[in-house]
Image (cartoon, rainbow, N blue to C red; front, side):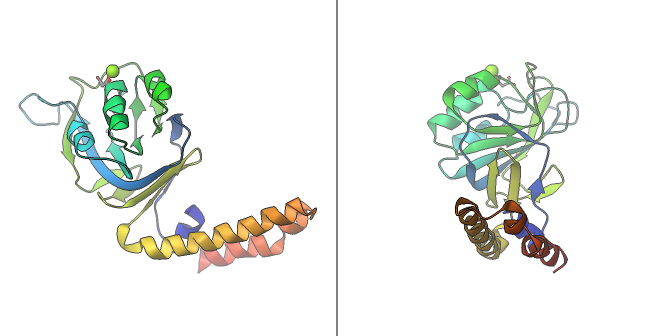
Length: 207
Ligand SMILES: O=C([O-])CC(=O)C(=O)O
Ligand SMILES: [Mg+2]
């Protein structure tokens, strides 16, 4: 998917976030949440914990995508995981720290984030909006965009470019399957990942 974005000159690949829990690929449509520091948020104190509206209205094939202002406190926790898991939500991506990671692991719920922390968001972070377009690790993400995340990171695909990105990704995947089969048949890696593979990336990157 990342190679397909490269090929089409699209941003959307996010490095540096790590898998904190779960082991299944996270695939679905983004449901965005934007967090700000409590000092920058609304004057009245928050009466609803962050991300709860997004969780309460989302379900299977949806992914909660949480923008985080970078303070050292959690943008997600175990009770949110429990509620999301009960609703069949595909997973959560947080551009910041996450807490209660062991609870999320016990439930097998997939989370990618920047780090783990024990520190609560309460009194520190508030939800500025949800379902609005956000900037997540430098990528603009709208609710409804496609997401795929796994142990290597995240790709976001704008909904209106999804068909062409997926088509291109299928071509790359077919090519890699053939290369993998060639290895099974005894071809050497120097030949399998030879000039044609390198040229493919070069052509792609500059097309
Ligand atoms: O207080 C928080 O940051 C959220 C939390 O622990 C949870 O969802 O369990
Ligand atoms: Mg908790």
